[in-house]
Length: 329
Ligand SMILES: Cc1cc2nc3c(=O)[nH]c(=O)nc-3n(C[C@H](O)[C@H](O)[C@H](O)COP(=O)(O)O)c2cc1C
Image (cartoon, rainbow, N blue to C red):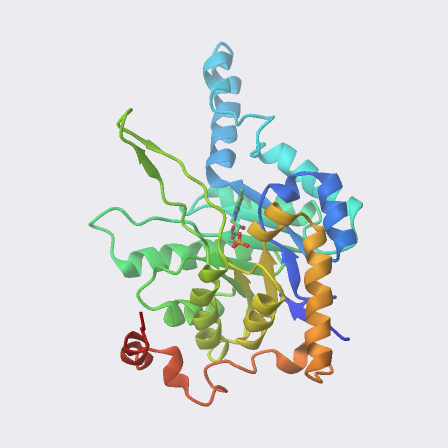
């Protein structure tokens, strides 16, 4: 079965990509992902805060001499998941040498500034594409929705001006008009959209009166939001689309591709079941396609997007009343 797909101009042997997460932080695991069938791997993100923190620390060391102890507090923990810009680039180079599948670097930041120049360094280190994670929580009552969107568009433009690599933008679902933003990003030069970022909701410790991080892995239910928007966006933009969030098995991947995804990223499922989960998922996809007499994955790509489903209203608000009526105890 021909499972090939094109994502960000890259020819992928199948649609399953290992999404940005700690699995990409280890070379052996990256090799393992390739052996298991991953078509590409997205590296963990290099964060604006890490780049700017390291740059500040460097400046302090150079200008103050005696400031080393203070400056070193800015430096990210080298043993942790986030290792700092230099080690990141070194790891990226090593990953490119270790495997033959495309390696996508991930840059994570929200304010315009010099950190976007790291895209160039990622390109030099051999990245095949860049995933730009615009994880941003608009908390200032003075900032308008248009300002928030413009900020993302500006960052994409800045990164695109640095590199000739394809750039995908990982978006959150919290915009007032995602389709309009998608079109503006396409016009601004983005080569793809990764939908959607999961916002990790902090919890409260009521004994310590503190806010505590609480990272939960996804469930397959979360895919539905992605499916709806893949169906809506794929009928209106020409750039590549990848699903992230809630893809756990073969049926999830098939649904995402039918709604228009060119690639499907998996993270939670791989953290739970390990890289071999990709092998099993690919076998199941192939089996299903054969059973349903498809000749290739491409044949079903976008076959259930908004312009192709018999009743597009089922994807939009018109179905809201019917869905509420369908509730039975
Ligand atoms: C432990 C962990 C670390 C992650 N690190 C990153 C990251 O560095 N950059 C990023 O863009 N997304 C990161 N993500 C988000 C994933 O790439 C993915 O978008 C999200 O987990 C939803 O996909 P899933 O349902 O397949 O897990 C991380 C997720 C997890 C669980």
